[in-house]
Length: 361
Ligand code: ASP
Image 1: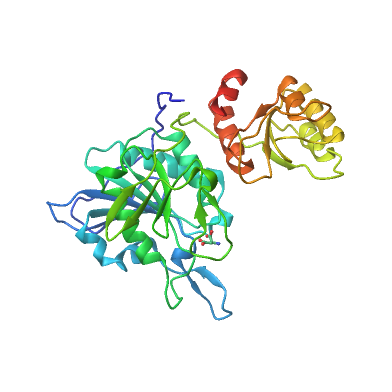
Image 2 (image 1 turned 60 degrees about the vertical axis):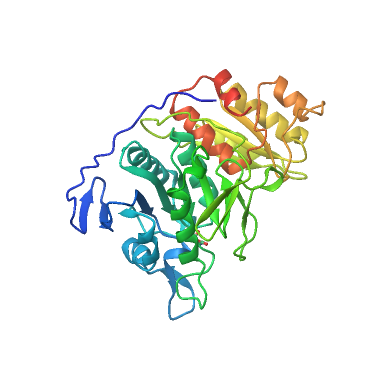
C-alpha cells in the first residue's frame, strides 16, 4: 500500500560545500569526501555497530571507530562516488531506541529528496538492523537505493568483513539496477528487502537472509545482479511524534496472559502477541487478549515460526480464526519486532483500525 509521505523536517543546513567538516541539525556531524565531478554523490549515515567497534583490553568489542574514520578506511569507495558522511551516533544497535530510528528516517528522507544525492548508505549494528531498515522503509517514499550495511567481525579482527560490505553497499547505492528495491539490508554480498530480512545466525558473516522469500540480488566485483523485486512496497508516512506504548507478548505452553492484563491497565495502546503455529494462543491468553481489546488496545497476532503467513485456520478459544473474528489483526509475514514497529507507526500516524489491518495484508 502506498500513501503520500508526510515529510518531517530536520534542520539540514549544510554549512560548507568544499570543506571537510560541518554540523547539521540535531548534533549530526557532516564530513565531505571526494570531489570528482564525473562521479555521483551519495550520503553515508553512520550509527555504530560492530563495524565501528574494536576489542578493548578485556577482549570485548566496544565502540571505537568514528563514522568518518570508518569510511576513510575504505578509500576505494571514492572511485565510485563522492560522499557526504553524516555521523548520527555510535551505538551498539542493541541499545538503539525507535527514537533514534525516527531521527535516522527523517535524515534519510531529507537526503533522498535531494536531486544531487543518488542513494544513501546507512551503517548500523546487525543486532537490530532488520528492524531499523524496516522502520526507515515504512517512513520513506523513494526509488533511490537506501542500503543498510554492517559487519559481523569488528574492526580489530584479522579479517573484518566491514570494508568489503561498505564497498558493496556503495556499489549498490550508485547502481541503476538497484532502483525500486527501496530499503535493503546488504551484507556478505547478498541484498535483502527490509520487509523480509531477518538475522539468522548469532556469529556468522552469512547471517542475513529472507527465508522463503529469497534474496533480492547479489553484488560482486562492483556489479549488482538483480534476482527479485520486493514483495511489499508501502510507505505509511512520517509521524510528528512516536506512540511508544506498544508491547510484545510471547505466548507459550501454560502462560496465563497476566502480563497482557497488567500492560493494558498501565495504558498500553497496541499489543503484538507472538503466538504459536499459524497464529494460535491458549484460552487464558485469549481471555487476556479480549480484555485488552475491551479497553481499545489494537491487537496484532504474529507467530514464533520463522516462515509462512499467519492465517485464520483454527477455531475454538484462541484459534487464529476466532482471534480475527474478535477483532485481532493477523500480521501475515511480519514477525513480532517488525509488526510492533508498523503498529507504532500506524498509531503515531493516527491511522484508523480498519486501515491498520490493511497495512498488514
Ligand atoms: N552487537 C552488535 C550491534 O548490533 C552486533 C553487530 O553489529 O554485528 O551493534
